[in-house]
Amino acid sequence: MLLPDVWLARRVDEAAVIGTALLQHAAGASHRKIATMLGRPPETVRGWLRRFAAKAETLCAHFRRWALALDARLEEITPQDSVTTESLEAIGLATRAASVLLGPRPPWCWASAMTAGMLLSNTSSPFPVPR
Image (cartoon, rainbow, N blue to C red; front, side, top):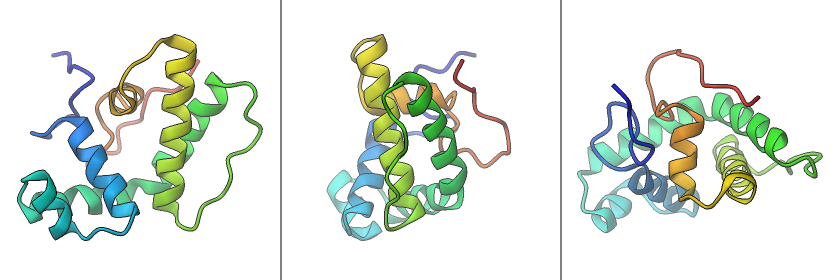
């Protein structure tokens, strides 16, 4: 089965909704505040945030590779105050580079495509690599 890029594997909510939660959390919002804002159960939002935090190092490295492969002008990605924030920065750089090079698309659709929908997966399946 092919998964449209607006979705993540085994998630009910669209990638953009989950991405909004991740960005709000990085900005300092609690999972309860985010859940209220998005109209989702607090347990669901907490699960997204925990899964992302658990995979943050892997995601950071993965999206750094994509960013550097898509934008030859990037030499290094500036370190952030946490691995989670650094991962979100790498996602932003990679998705921005993809939109410039390959055509506009919502950032979280690019993030889903660059991970084959496995952004928040709980398996050790490898992500697709940039070529």
